[in-house]
Amino acid sequence: MNQYECPCGYVYDPRTGDYENGIEAGTVFEDLPDEWVCPLCEAEKEFFELIDE
Image 1 (spheres, rainbow, N blue to C red):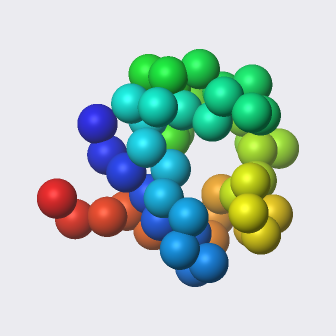
Image 2 (cartoon, rainbow, N blue to C red; image 1 turned 180 degrees about the horizontal axis):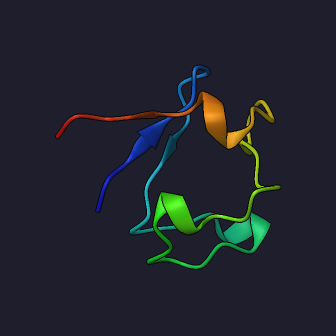
């Protein structure tokens, strides 16, 4: 599962999701709702970059 990083340094990891914002573990980045934003800085999904693994 691919991880994506926000410019602020927050990493979205689909293995853990974003429980505090209603995103269940196992939710891949592409399936996040369009209105989902970074929980730290509120950047929109378009600003996240794929982390090369």
